[in-house]
Image (cartoon, rainbow, N blue to C red; front, side, top):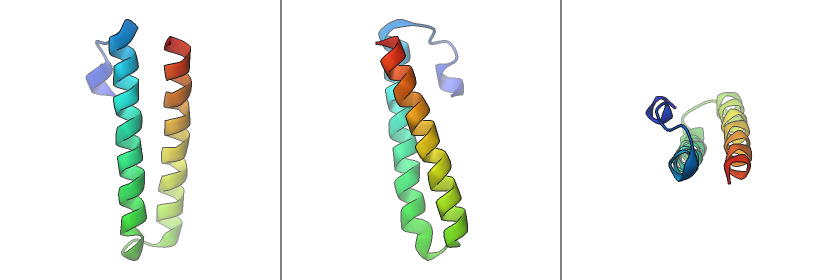
Length: 65
């Protein structure tokens, strides 16, 4: 989120939120692939947090559009 600190409004902030949402989705998929290595409890908790982050970012995108 630090990268977006100076992005205060307009299309630039919306684009930043979209990229952030995409990054959260990538992390979510990475954790799912790591489920062979990491305990299921850890994967589930982290995927749940990433789902919340993605939902918050989607809400921000809708608000700023």
